[in-house]
Length: 310
Image 1 (spheres, helix red, strand yellow):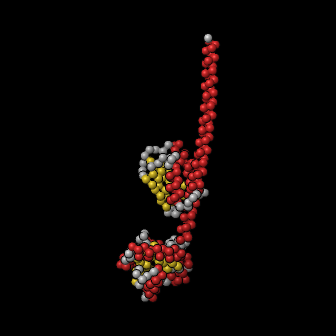
Image 2: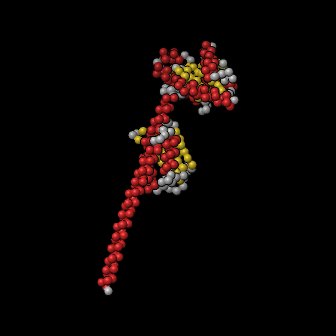
Image 3: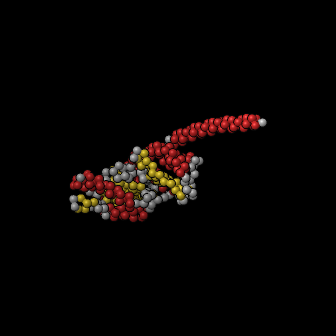
């Protein structure tokens, strides 16, 4: 009887051991399967993030994907160059913060928020997921920087002539469609050749940058400033009548007079001549520019440092 009981107990023990072996095998197979799924998911995400070079699209696509693995209530992404901010939902509560960079290139900052604290395991998971974002984000940033350079003047940083015609025609079309006023300012730096001849092109470049910066600060954020060529700039004032446009032109005139550039222990005096033309029913982009440009030359011929309205 004792021997039979002992044999039964040994058999039960053996069965438990066999079941344990099969259980471990199943777990190992399941873990291997999950790892394969995870690797495939990471690969799919990496491929999908390469489908666009738009920074907003890349960031939002990444966020939508990781939300299934990493719960958060909101986020903010900021980048200095190019100037970018993307945010979503709630930005309060507990947070975790990452400086994104690769090969000493700054890719911006990313901050996540939610009501409860992030656990260590969640942060490890997030950091692993962020490695998938880095290269697509770098590509999108480089593309945007290249696009901005193609449309901006390298010296002053304002829009360049290659973008002027398209912007002008678009603004005129919008003004005519919505029956809005529209005004153009053509601005030329007075005696600029004398600045270059007397002080050199380096000082001339400083003067150009200072004038461009001053004009940009004197107009509204909705207005558009272009370097048309040499020392000549153009400002497009959308939805602005002649009276308001004249006040803006006066602000530009006065602000340029206050520019202080020290050269050889003396201050360089700068001024501009401004030609202004308000859109009429007969105007197209070319005729409007010709009228504003002719008014600018009248201002120069009539003594400079003034505004002439076409």
